[in-house]
Image 1 (cartoon, rainbow, N blue to C red):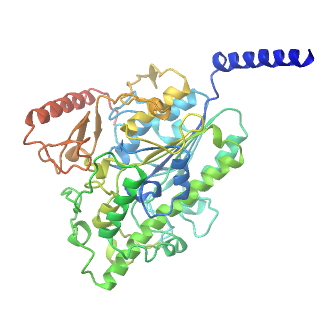
Image 2: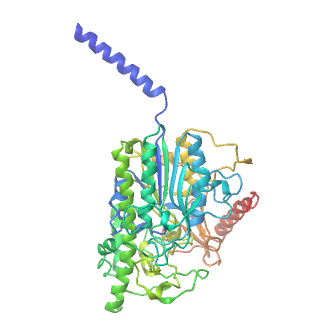
Length: 516
């Protein structure tokens, strides 16, 4: 009898628990960590086929979701502007995602690179939307240069810092490390508070100039003596085996940097040429160049590991959504400071050349700034235990403009009607939450990327893109993901349809008030 009554009690308690679980309070809002890398090609990351060691990013992929078709805006500042506001273009009335998380009760932290287009209002600057911020604007060196001052200043809570005032743990000071040092200090503060936190961690790696710690460079010396031709084929085969390529993605022929508006175009740095036939000395120099680039990514991954470890130690990892992405494809732009010092140390201002950047963007065409897939199509990984199925891959396309509506979805708050006295601009993106949950979300009406002279506009399977402000090219991006067959001549009506739609949409941007 006792056993029967006990069993009945268990059944009743289980039913009550189930009832409250299904119809009670919604689950806890997750902590959010948004990590952005800079000027890295899709195949440079290990879990997307690269030979560069990225075990911590790979862990996020293994325990989360990888997108095979995820778009950015093809350059640092437009990508950040669109990602952080959910707008392809806007002005006053733009809402920063940290304003959304702040409204939802999050403790907001930023450490890293800030770089906006002129249309982004000043009230969206880091010191105005984050509880704590440490940032720099656009390009600076990684090591403290011999002159004793960084090219551009750093800011702590909006106050300019001298190089001597920047805190760091490992000497000599290195930007990727001390960005993380600062983030970890504020994370510890977040752990001691009630409520969720949002950490935005935009690294500068692996943007020009090529500077890395000697011990990291040493790990890759000799790796690239195979040359870009062999390595590109190897990466392509690994990408196919991993399942991180869209169906029917062929390896595009190698090509140099065709951008006529970003110069000077120096054949040694901007053209394609075969690896075979180069002198042994030249091959060794080129191996060093790519080894430094790889070392910069490796160091970033080590620091991402520091963040993951701290979250895990604090018992916060399982209720944290971590997203990793890149602002644009690999960048081959020549610097006029190159000739004197080999890549690596604090006084080197070496740039990655087109042939190595072409390797990074395997199997796609072209580079940063371009709407072609090599510039606009980069990794996106999301890890969220209990929501995202581990080690999953989606071929559904997404865009950085979708991140703001995604956060709005999971924050469970309404989008504001106004911001700083301006009517709030409607978001342009569409939530990725259904994709995170393993569902079909239905493609957004369109995707946009690339700078004006290199613009891309995609609707469904078709994409128009231009190079050097030339004529629109047309591709069936489903059947031809690497843009090998330009259909513009055979389908002029489709070109006219898409270009007309783009013109209509972009004209709406001109109506947005802009104080800049």
